Image (cartoon, rainbow, N blue to C red):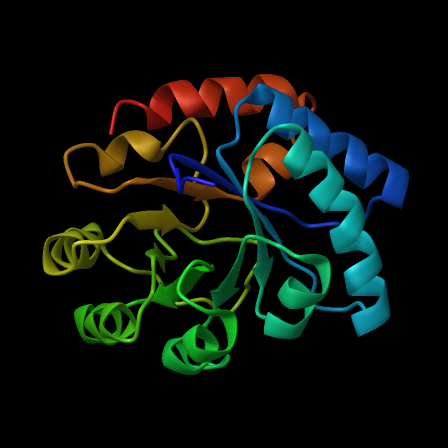
Length: 207
């Protein structure tokens, strides 16, 4: 599948039943999400695999790549299209050796040096932030738009902004050169995930 990260949706299943969660995921996909990351920090490996298989059925239905957060083993187990690695996760170059050249590998970076390292190790795209405070990661460090701009100019791979982004504040990113935006709560907690995704993809297409 082609990598299109204009509207990159990162899930959060907390506070939802599995049925409610999967409904929201499909609504987001119907609304125009272009890339989806399943992020589960508290599930056992077996639970993670089980949920990932169910989400993968949905992403394949809409021809959208499924990215697994952190876990190379889970990504392989469910045949996902990609994996996303943080600074404390498996190094990108090791993951690339395990997964092969066709697997999508994303990396979280906060500095130009981290971005250059991830690119040199074989990352396909970068997630940079947090641009704004976020409820997903309470202790996160804010990344300035100046740093985001410098990273975009330093690497030739897609760079996505992440962290507290929603339809009311993404305008600050115009002109920076990002490939798209990553959102969690903006869609996950929306009264109408489909409509929210539709609004966000229209804004993302202006970058």
